[in-house]
Length: 325
Length: 291
Image 1 (cartoon, rainbow over the protein chains, first blue to last red):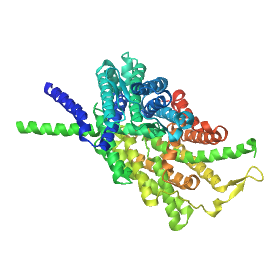
Image 2: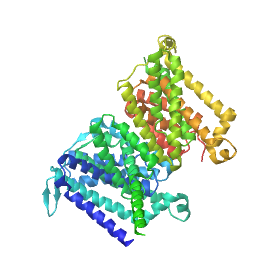
Image 3: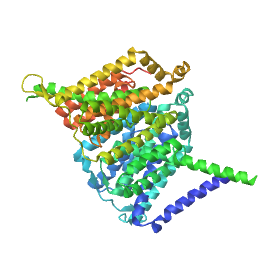
Image 4: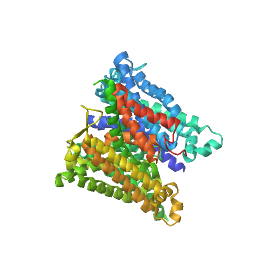
């Protein structure tokens, strides 16, 4: 057990080192792809706190990703706001929206939860589409990202992809660490309880509505941060970042990665972004390949890629045990 | 024409769209509402129906023949999907079903693009239906084909209602839906019942494709365009309720028709506000049974 823990910390340290040296190794194009992967990893991890941890399927997470994406672009455009404030604003606006929607959604579970979140997502998408004077509708809005000003360090040039990469990695690692910490708190355990049996959780005296509301808000906040990073990175936001297709993308990433491990969604996000990029440059009909992949995955690896990896690991270790004895 | 004069025509427009929606939603009511299978490929099956019908028309020139053959082919595709894919993963719940049917929808959409191309297709309707009828007095002609849509959809509703509620077969189906194990223990072949139910659902989607193709234009995006409306209808009407689906489909059709007429800026909101309101205040749907 102790040995296992050391390996985990070692693997984490290796991953962080790898992230740190990547800009030296990768050409600009792949660095851009890596930034996208890192951003969506945060999105999928926060989404999985609902899906995997609490057992709540949300069809409408793009509402928070999207509104988080609009906030910094609007602030940069109209108020010359700073980079850190813009990123934070993404999270806060998503949180505010979550407070309104969550009040209704968190009372539901199962299919009604999924459908109500879809309805709210559709409403907010409708606003983005129709309120053209604010959001630019389908054409979207563009605003270049300001430089990062850190007291004590001075101004850091964010036009450089490498600098921006480090900024994204630091923000995302901080946020994912927060998410991980939350899964270890009593709130995290309570979420697992709700996933296993919501009725019984209520019977032993917990307020399941409050718990679900709280975890919903946390997810909304981090998803908003991810949205903000995505639009700051692209220096552009449009309704494609807030529509229902984006919601299903987030869901698919999380599911494909595997919802029963904390790190599964990260694998899923990286895998799907890489596959999408590779396929779309290979063939016009990439959707056929992707569709087939989904079907094979659902049929033969119902716990996602992380489930598959764990099974392989167990198999290899069992084999080693056999050899020893 | 003044605003008052336009109301009956606009109401009829809404009714026709609503009835096409109903035709599609009735299939989804069987599959999603009754069998509890989250089928996101229903729109793709509908699209397949429209394209099959187009090809049968090109080969034989017979609309009525395509009305017979195309839905049967789509029903066959549905049976295949249920037997070899959906049945095996149903125990895992909704999310695998969602992903699987997403995958199927992706594949079907691309297959359609490869076989029939990206361009919208014109499906010719038979001479007897291609004219127009004068309704609401002189000077206002209404396309006969749209009245034909109303007729077919209404017939489907009556037929489904009679089979489900007035025959022995309907009793078995409804019993199997509410308690699988018990009906199986009584000696009925429940997997076969579900296979048939899914097949009929897919057949209805195919029929909607044949009927709706000439009206809503046959193109590869037609599945995605109608999918959201479709789920709104099934949920607002009440899961598993055929009458509810009819009511909700007409409601959505009219909301869109009059919404576009009076307040075009806000037309798209009505449907989602309705969905949200129903889920918050009456989660079982307009005519659904409380759980």
